[in-house]
Length: 415
Ligand code: ATP
Ligand code: MG
Image 1: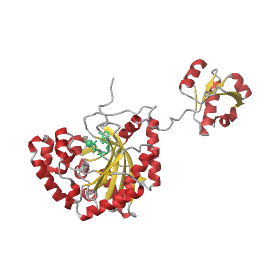
Image 2 (image 1 turned 90 degrees about the horizontal axis):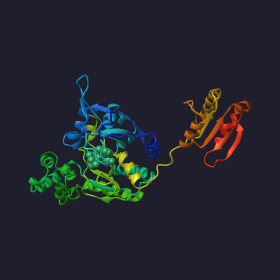
Image 3 (image 1 turned 180 degrees about the horizontal axis):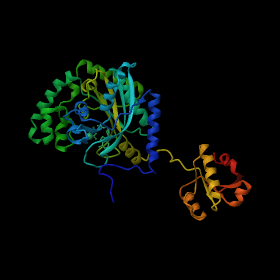
Image 4 (image 1 turned 180 degrees about the vertical axis):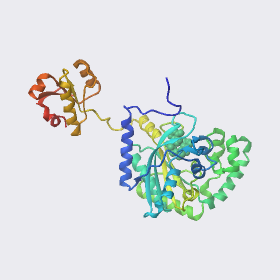
């Protein structure tokens, strides 16, 4: 048998209601925040991610699904949602509309990772992008969208870790301090970190290797190197979060794995799903739009991993609401009754009722067993006599109560 590719997941018909539940909540919250959906292609020119995500990141170095198309162009399946949105924003001149622009996406994300709990090769993200405001209140708005959504699905125990990695000015000094510190441990670092030391020192703080993590613990912290502007930005953001009653911890160890961040970075972390506990990560990336060839537009956003969110909800016993039940099953008894049953369910469906009949030409016994197993709320047997009189018996499957009604009035009993 052909099996599903490693690191991917099927969503079975019995589970898809969980996804619909989350997607509906996402759309509802975004609507209230004035955030509109943006949809961009599943693949983009590889160049976009090289420039947008950054050539020294894990994503670009190790994790991209890149291929040449038949025209010899290098394409890559989205390894994150932001670069495509930034491309679309610039290409369509969306900066000409009144600013700021608030957008959200729901998308598949592809990364060639070592599959493990909470780490897939195709996962799904809900992301928000706010373009055109450099104010800390825009950061607060984005964070509060994530918090509101999480609260509304009952996930209120995630901790918000907040940090600023400074602007390019404060980062110059900080990078020097980091390099000086890590140099003294150079031979104890993993090969990747040895490379990072020369190419992208900030990434040293993001390593997942135990020994590197231990060394990173005593490294200089960025908060000691922030310029006055960056300090002021963070202070205002904290004030806004306080006013909104959004709790956070200032965590100098949060640096985020993508190149494009400037200033604010944050993560929502769960302690309920093991090592891969970051459910949502985001921050500010004021240079991204320019980096990919557009105008300079300040931007802030987040990406939230929906499989990890579902894991948190499953592990904490948080409900996804009820899977919708089928309303009524009409069981035709005898071949002549089939067209009448078909017509009857068609009328019910027009009225918004979830109605079915037998489409396998099975015995009444088999039909009743099926209807019972599938959890229909009502069952109606449609025999020759019922058709002749135009009166049917409707059985409530929960209470076992039976009621007579005319075939034409079925919907009034079922609603
Ligand atoms: P990690 O540090 O766990 O590798 P990341 O920094 O690579 O995460 P982001 O690029 O910020 O993750 O993606 C945003 C969110 O998407 C993550 O917080 C996580 O919930 C989810 N995510 C990222 N990679 C995966 C994956 N391979 N499988 C499932 N979910 C993922
Ligand atoms: Mg990663």
